[in-house]
Length: 134
Ligand SMILES: [Zn+2]
Image (cartoon, rainbow, N blue to C red; front, side, top):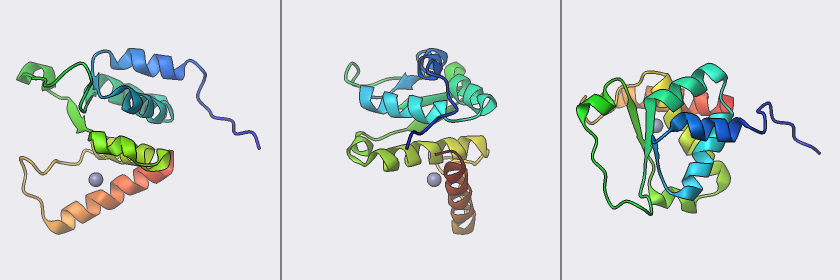
């Protein structure tokens, strides 16, 4: 059966272009992030491509530094290289789940101590977001 996606053929290129330099991940993961973000409604897509950095191990860089100005009002999503060894479905799910945390305004646990209950609730909400869009 033919699957028809509601994203145009140019969406991937558009998404890549919109990210500009904010996609610091390996080429395979770049394709997954682009594919996942292209599935999102335009409003969410625009928010993610303008306010979200994706970081991973990239072939052409051993390390990167970001300064406060670049990160003000932005979000970082860190993708491990290990992720690219998972199945297509798992990779897309993980990326969409992390985008869910951003969209749902969840706090991260590096600077804020969260209760187990709050973490569990946020994980459920991010899963529900991923289920909606993957
Ligand atoms: Zn999570």
